[in-house]
Amino acid sequence: MRTKLRDIASVIRSKNSGPYELTLDILFKRTEDFERFSSMNIIDKTLIARLYKIDKNQVLSIIKFPQAKAIKATIVRPCGSGDLGERDVYGAQQHAPLMNLEWED
Image (tube, rainbow, N blue to C red; front, side):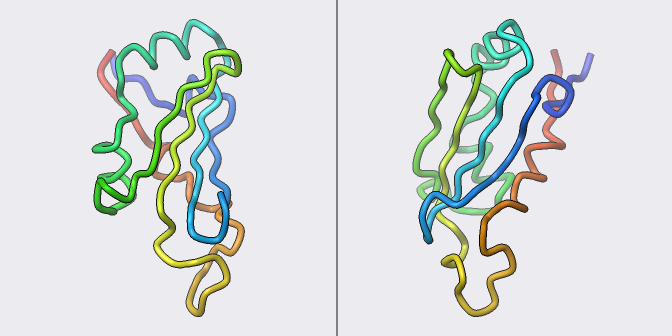
């Protein structure tokens, strides 16, 4: 059975983490879903780099927060917030690649 992240997460969002970093947040609906997903280690630097088409060394951190049923990944922004040609000054439109993430259960 295939599972989609958007089906078990209550929130998938992105936001600035300063002008040169972007944070991706995944908050789960249920503790059981967070624990199962976390134990599979699906979210890692290799996956985030592939989804966002960046080098693995541009994935700065991936942190699990069991108390909040959340996983946070921080990456280097492709260009600084507000730079010429930048299309998402708040970093709030960058979560789509995570929404379509699916895996075999």
